[in-house]
Length: 72
Image (tube, rainbow, N blue to C red; front, side):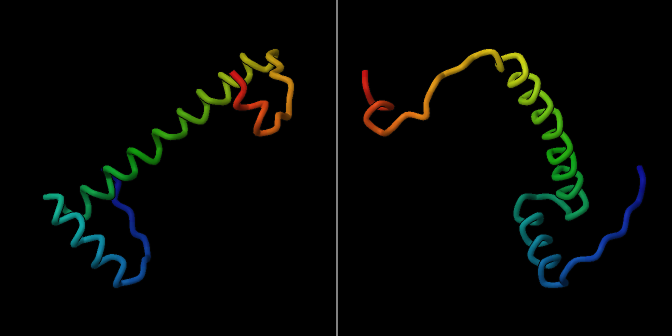
């Protein structure tokens, strides 16, 4: 595993450490969990972009006003 160093406000680090402890984790583990979640979002953005590309031929018309949006 690669070791990294970063800077943050001391009170923020202490609060983060308290939150991690309350979750039964170390700050190191909490950060690794956050980093894994953060990087997994990139795939979601790419999937969304791919979906929008596949659906670009659909034209819903509009813009619609509130009454038109609520018609049934």
